[in-house]
Length: 248
Length: 261
Ligand SMILES: Nc1ncnc2c1ncn2[C@@H]1O[C@H](COP(=O)(O)OP(=O)(O)OP(=O)(O)O)[C@@H](O)[C@H]1O
Ligand SMILES: [Mg+2]
Image 1 (cartoon, protein in one colour):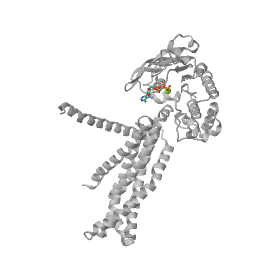
Image 2: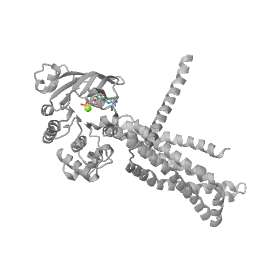
Image 3: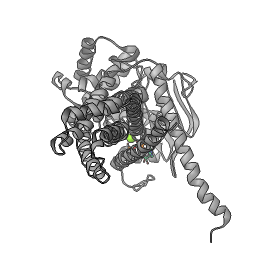
Image 4: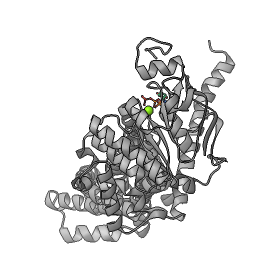
């Protein structure tokens, strides 16, 4: 359903993506792993058109994303940003219900608020936080609000950029289960970036490893441990020695 | 010694860069205005912007105008005394405030207060990916952030300038009648008789233009901010400088347009 074909992206002399090929099927949960700074976030943003690739083609259901009708295209997506990216001028529930308060999905305020509170509950937040502002919450709480906002309008494709970073192990477990649920029950297609190997095993159908600007390895999560790829092995075992240099 | 081609290149490069910058700014302005005619419209954002840009600028604009009007009265009185023309204080204060000082001071205060805060806010949103988040939530940042602010500033500009004109004249009046011995009724009479309709329209048109410039520059630099806290600082600084210079340049051009025939 989503296909990246030979995607390149540089920022000045920093050649981040150097020919990324990746395919995600409908209803599949793809997890992208890879070292810090290898361009995982840039890859997600390229699909959404927030970053314009220098070359290569990205398609959604066979249609080039740069040619798609923007509003209809974006209405199918939800995205959790790595830093949360909550609007600090709006209260928590208005953040979560942003899509439901304006545009084509607009609905009555009371109903939008109710949905927001329900989504907050699903990410482990009490209704009391609804009227607070982002600056009043801890980093992990902000992250979960960002997650609630990404899933609020029940999009069919959801991107999660490090959903469990900064969360305690129990909360990580809750979020992993939630993502799995969204994929299995709602039939959503998910693409998740994470450094957390527990999360990878909990959420992924398929795993792709990004290294030096290309997809080094991709395959089913069950094959990850036995794939024999030295890069993947070093990464999942967290060894300092191996083909991946520690300084990059 | 520079070779001729190197010399030409040294002139050409900044000239091209300047043209490119003007082009980008023009596109930004066109894009902003085009959203005026394309729904959806974000009325709540417009209302919030009107309050923060218009209403909360009143104190600073009023104070500036009051002191300037007072100082102007003192200067004209002492300057006029050199050729026995002390009596022109009400007329000159009125014309000076309404034609030039009211609009320019209000414009510069808007640049200081509004441009800087718009640029810093939008740049911070950019740096923390809030602008990206808006896009993914199917909301056009130009429509949601830029247009309401530009519209609000263009509406608030003339109002603030009108207030500056009145308070400036009142400042002159306070000083002239309180310290310089002018008759209160005669002062007001002279002021009202002297001001012409074009003085007022030029003043308000300038206000609209300066408000527009102030908000556009804030949004433009904010949207094009670099990364990190440094990017935000740089965007804020550049936006205020650019807005102030453009307001003064626009003031000269509008004065030329209105008062030379
Ligand atoms: N807008 C941008 N301008 C310039 N450089 C950028 C920009 N966005 C990303 N980069 C650069 O691209 C590289 C990859 O960034 P990216 O955020 O995709 O890394 P990542 O794989 O998500 O890392 P992490 O796991 O630490 O989040 C980095 O070197 C970063 O500095
Ligand atoms: Mg990242």
